[in-house]
Every structure is written in structure tokens, then in C-alpha cells.
Image (tube, rainbow, N blue to C red):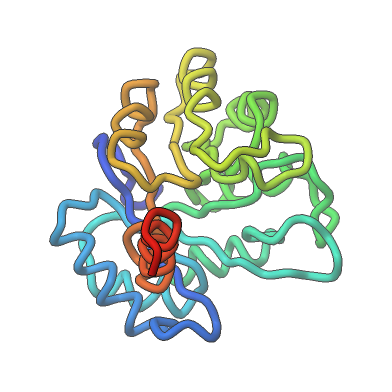
Length: 228
């Protein structure tokens, strides 16, 4: 039996910090996740086994786990191998997010092989994709969620600064698999639009959990409009 799934509609908060940032560290991210839960989040997205484990100890809502790891010069870095996917699950992830594109993986496995191996272990899979075709293929493989995470981050997907809500809409129309809206969501109006387009839930990260990003955003807006 698979672990706790996200069945409600709403907001999932991505609690991730990177080496060199003030909030980097599992303890910080666990507190951030708890704050998100108290604010009404229906799930947490977390990166790295230490953060996943710490967050699972803090919150009662489902955790989407992934492992960002650059192996060699390959393009796949979101849970790039079967072993990293299993590690995320063993750390406590209820759902494991993996690169859902057809790009070459460091361990040489195909997307189908990875999904089948995870399902054999009763591990729920979220496929991070960048195009309609990738999303539909992931749906054929039977993943539990399709997320638009990588739209704009592969060279062949639309390069835009706003969320790819059109991708959400097309996938929601073409498949019954829950579609997750993720990537560049900063304004509440965009989140509402994504839900109206058919998203099961919206994932927001930097706009909530990275204060240095928010500070830079507001400071730049001030500089662009007022002589300081």
C-alpha cells in the first residue's frame, strides 16, 4: 500500500534551501514546513534525505520528496537515478518526485524502468515534466501525479518568465492523472488561474520560503520605479 497521498486541492509549499543560503539545513527547513502547514498547506515538497526526514518528524501532511544531484554532465538532476528515488522514499517521502522527461539518466535506466521499479515497491511517483508529450507519456506509465516543474527548464520547452498555465490546462484536458502546477508561481492570481485550468494543486517555493529571493524581488521593484 502506498503512503499518504495528496487528494485535496490547494497549496503545496516547496521548502528548499541551497548551500550558502542562511536557511540551508534540515532544522531550518523543518520549521519552515511546520509554518507552511500551520498556514494551510496541504503538502510539502522537500529536497534531500536529511530535509525529508526532519520535515516528516514535524508535519502531519504528505511530503513530496526528491534528491537534486548533478551526476557527471548529464541534464537530469531531479532524483536522477533509481537509487536516489529509493533513498528519498526511505527517508520518509510519501511521494517521490523524479525527472519525468525522456532525457538520458546517469544510471542508464529509462523512465519506464524507473517508474516500474518504484511501483513494484509501492512507491507513489510524481513525474516532473516540461511538455504535453512528456506528461502524457508519464500518464501512460501510470504515475500518480504529473507536475509542470520543468517547463522552461529544458531547452525544448517554452522559455517564459511566467508560470506555464497553458501546459496545465492542456494536460488536465487530456489525462485523468492529477496535474500539478509548479514553476515560477509568485502571484496568488496565477495560482487561482492554475486551479481553474484544472490543476489538482499548486506548488510554490521561492515566493514563500526564500526570504533573500523575496527581498531581491521587492528591492528591484523599488529601484525600477523610484530613484533611490
